[in-house]
Length: 438
Image (cartoon, rainbow, N blue to C red):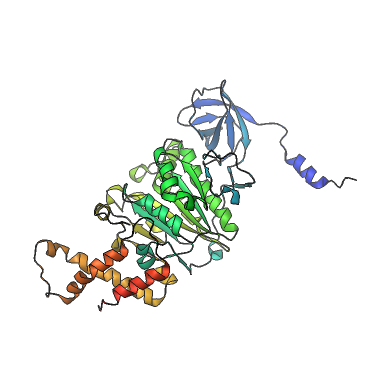
């Protein structure tokens, strides 16, 4: 006897379809319709008369017609073209061999390094960790950035929103954290970025040091809305895999706003009613699902930096306001600070970490409050200083703030490539705030 596993062979034969279910395109607009026996999330191949098959996904139904949206830009599609059902749901490659690679939302390599090897496929859509199985955030997540580690201390497994307009150093800050953090693996999703910005981010901002322990998933702004949404979901699935292997993962998505815009396009294609600023209900569900899949699980954890675009500084626009309520803290980058040549351009007074007091000792927490008080006192007196209405000696507390503020700014300012250990950051914070008696 050859020792064949007949039960496994029997299951394989039973589960193998005897025919390929298909249909034909009925209409081709922003979405395509087809009468095909498929479920939402199934993948289908549209077969043009000439050229390669077009991969599409079923995103909804109306009566007996399925709505299809292509992953890639498609041309020369016509009603009547054959459509074949390929299978259920999106699968994404995972594994340690992904480190150092750049892929798209379908797991296809973009870096010219050849095909992926020994990367097992995992389903993209998985539930968030159960609430009662999540580990509490107890340990600090060291970024190497003094402004964050001192006053906005993050914890391992925290979800942090980075709210910024364009051109204020957002990408540079993300790259510095990715290079300087103590995470085992970085998973970085560039969603809706301009194509020309990808290579400079990988080569200059992230660099070889950061790329060596990173997986980068890219879906640029000219790609379809479906590809942009699925790229973000694939990135989370990859981070989820490393977390399940008890790794501490840093997950970065740039940006949640462009993910929301892509989901809005899909929602409008499905006929969802637009609400505030045209965002459809599915946008907010997508954002909630994205954030909740991150964080700590029973084993391992995903610390997340999620960027939100707030051009004009409007922190109350729908996406910014909603995300601020989902995350465990937010960091605001201010254009006025950046215009002064101050890096990182973090507005400490408008930023907060909701877990800071859980991951630092009482001495550090008290010092952080003192530093905020110094900065607030200094900010309150600025108008009087500009018009010459204040002279030293009028208020001892203001005088002390004016004395200490140059030291505070020197402490918070940090050049690109400069890293500060957690111990050095704490020592610097305590030294400055020891002189503040209020």
